Image (cartoon, rainbow, N blue to C red):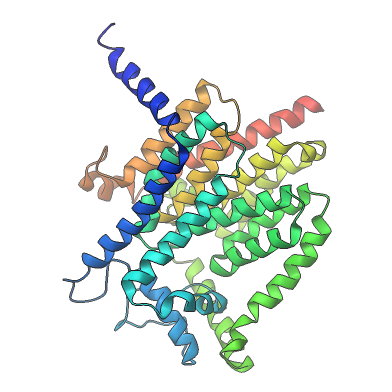
Length: 394
């Protein structure tokens, strides 16, 4: 064999061996990884004079106590943590499930919940058995990054996929519940409501959404007064309004702005992105096709990240899960494989020292939104392929 062919042969053989592994072994690995990352974050924080390496979990946990004590959730508490709580009052209440525990077991259970929901969701995707393990490995690095930051992105990716699965099985009430839960965690989950259009039960789903929005939105009344809850929602709205103009994030806008000096009103930019997202929906007859609905799910998962003005590295588990769905659930060509590998290198590996040295990453990869580049390119390709089918049909 030619010496130049040996590395390629090695990776082909490695891929074949990995694809044959029982999936339960990889699931166990992901769960142990979640627990291990949690333990490392806790133990490595013991010698820190202020704050912790699992700051986001502390923010979530303390928000529950702030809620109970009638404090403003959306202000700084530098004695407890850095940064500000930015989620809904309802999520602060839900964090009571973990807040009563010491930090270490609470953090482990929190990350395990994230991981279990995503694994359960991925298992319901129509991915060939021999390709499923490769899908898991594709999202491995982004999963590690998100768990290390003790955020909710892994959970959100799983909930959105499970919502799609429930819609596929004509269970609109439960699907609406899961999407509403994501909205009360991070508002960008509202984009997933577009999936309702693809199903005959769309009106049931709309009614269910309204009901769940009211029920979950008023849940904090279990521990606070109506006046306090009204104050908290106003404070949350003020924070989000002020936060919107603060940065460009690791996003499509951030990429174009830092590379090309692109400048546009953010609201207009997002509206244009939403319009482009909706264009494939003009293929009304395609709504009956399972693959079309699945690709719309992939589009949702990518869109909510690349059009998020506050997008950051840990959120890219959501976008990379969308890319995994785009690639592993259909018969891709060589062009698709090249894009997949470029996304893996520039999005996932760019956050590690495996390819990009730390200094290079801090100087160029992060400031220039490199993580957003090929996720955005793949999203445009996905949309273009859908529109191409629309043109051909017409």
